[in-house]
Image (tube, rainbow, N blue to C red; front, side, top):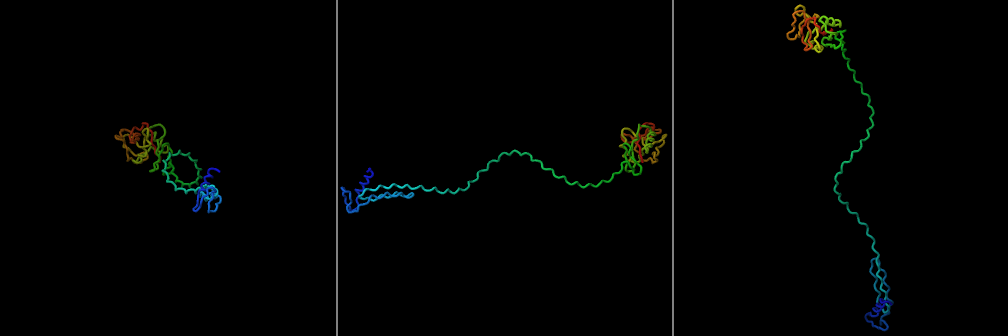
Length: 262
């Protein structure tokens, strides 16, 4: 018997219920029924339960103390409910601009449109060499057709010559030396007279007054330069290239001729 059993037995022998007597020689309790062997150890406590009670004291051998029953650990709790979403963080600073992408591929060419409607034909222009009268032409080099009278003005071809020589050259071209009978006609022909002076169809003989033009038209409009005419014998009129004004000169001097076709 171990020390623990002896101690329990001693405690059981010295214990006395009310009204009992001790017989230490026989370790019997008088007047009480003999108790059975010490109570069985308490059963294991249920999960988390207390340890079983000690058996009651008796005259018999004390029962073995029941071992404390270890309760099974509780089950894990259910997962907690998710918390509310946190407050959004402060927006970060804008990043640097990205590198530009490559140029896109050119689109497909559209279909050709329908041809446009043809425009209205313009009116025919007037023939540049025809005057108001049938048969008048103005195809001579540098020739100009004046719309007011339908006459063609041009320079006689060839080298400079006397007044009579230029008169003959104009006649050979179907014309005559020009007769300038108005300021408008004078202004029209001035651009033709360039480079040198040109004879026109006006002359006088032996200091006689200036007569009619070679065509018989009256001598009324004049455009003499200051101090002209100033010849004192037979003289003929010319248009000066420098300013378009008239001047007289001896008729045998050599100049070009300004012709007029009508």
